[in-house]
Length: 365
Image (cartoon, rainbow, N blue to C red; front, side):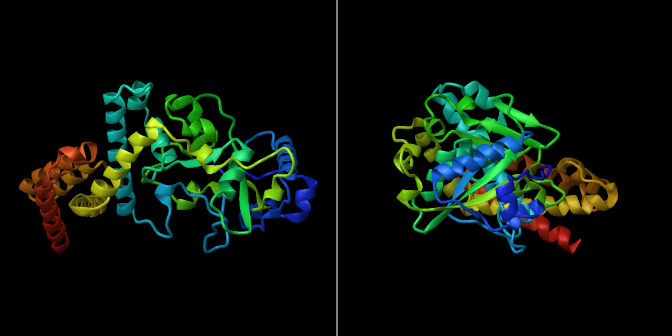
């Protein structure tokens, strides 16, 4: 995503002289919700090129360089290997398929849209905390952000982060100049999904970036950070006329989409992330990575896996029968990710052993 240089008011500029160091700056202390609203009003005025969005957190998470960091959940971790990233996207793809299946079976409003739009699938899975996705939660409501920051927070303070994002134009706004996609949950979620309507939620990610990127920092939303605020975790913060939104209101009961997502989360936790299926996906990621790296010596560029396998056969790295075996495992992997419930454990173990044998063969080769 493209980085921005925030505009600060004179009052805030006195506290943070170098706006290029916003991500490593000390959060600005704010005593009341009224004072916070006044800061946001002024920031909105001076940052005319950006629409302001918020995140409320109990902590300010910083990396080794001392910078606040805001990665979508699928990219989080000090070091995420390529094969681990592929495994996470495999889990996401499997969960997406199950979501579409359940929506279609129960004829949930909007299931046709859900079926053809991956960003809608990812948004629901992210917002209902089913599995890791390339999207990050934001809200356009300052009150919601403050409530998230203070609910279930036992510390004396909480943090409000303000981000500058492109103006939204549609339910799913894609800005190619800034390489960002912004999904308005109120517009894309079916009316039976209650949670987004109480949270005024948005999901934002980098457009068309999945497992391939030049540097991981291009995926960190500290590139869009305008300011950090530190608020007291006390009832006095709200003052007269304002109040915290209780957790039971932000996470309402009798949400049918929450019930569906709970089923998928069970599947993701029990079948996609663990046991023989998880072992197979990890081993397959290793094999895929290994094949692509060997093929790179011949092609000088990254190719789709099947083309990479063919290059190994043409250049006598593997015999023809292994080409067919690897390709069959590739097809099995696709079935496994798309409809994991239909695959028997015996088949997974069989293909896992094949993958490990192929890895040993190629390493010895």
